[in-house]
Image 1 (cartoon, protein in one colour):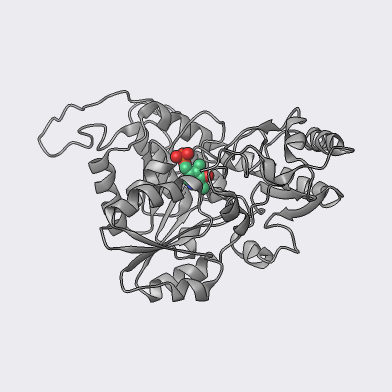
Image 2 (cartoon, rainbow, N blue to C red; image 1 turned 120 degrees about the vertical axis):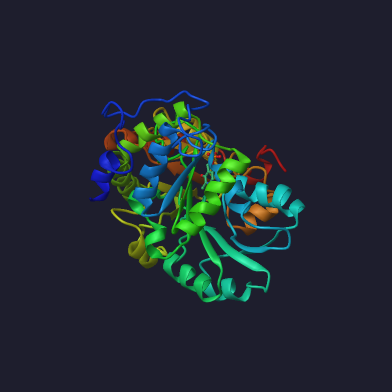
Length: 395
Ligand SMILES: *Cc1c(COP(=O)(O)O)cnc(C)c1O
């Protein structure tokens, strides 16, 4: 079955009891056990038919053995790290999602895990960071907000060579664009609140494992920790996922159009998009991303131009955090998603005050470009922006 067919017919795609083509929402906490120890379902934390449907679907889409659904992407990430113990070390990408960094820095470190933060594009640096206690390499590609691309297969090979697990947060691409398990990665996870759900109406997370042994471990922890996705949300997520390919096609085409448009704007100093042939990561992106290069684009305005003026003058593109929604979303990392990072560290990581991040939606292309035009018009004749006086929530 091809990917687009799997979205509709993969996993458990209809109710085995009634044949309903939409899986029912099984609002049940417990199940009648006709014979002790032989029931398919016992208690909904351990297993629920609606959740199982969406779990089997994501396993199919990522090409893994088992799928697991959680109450959020963050709960999924915490469950993955719960496979490990005090004293274990991890190599982590240097611009992982802010919430992942927070989990590592303020929670997991207290439990005695240690972390080496590395630009995972630099394979020599990754290899040099491996210690006797290192257990896994954890990364995102493309990253947030600078859309840096790591060679997935190369990292997976390196991990295997050193007997480490490789774990990838695939949120920014979705399995339509990128399937890390096919490139040798052991565990892939998502914030399904983004492209998988797609409609800005559900918070969810998923994990897919490469083999049964890892699947058993994650399944055990999912039940032991209990951060499961509820039946209503499981249904909503599965419904959203059915249109993933249709949505992604529109997202990807619009992203390419927005990139072309931004390339001609004199007010734009720099564009971050893996599909830019001048981007140093372009060849790797082309090798491992399918159909397109994702629908996230970041760009810097010329030094001194006020990004607030730009984003606040848009009428269609919505000023909001998050990404992967049908509607286009825009934000200023320095003031919003990355506002908690002290300015010096932020600048050192390449996130300038003038940086704007766009999650490109599925609106009509001409309407989108006309809206961006509104933003650029608002910048004309504007006062120079005092870049370092931005009122971002420091720390
Ligand atoms: C949003 C996000 C998360 C966290 O997911 P939640 O569903 O918000 O808990 C993790 N990783 C990435 C890349 C994200 O964008």
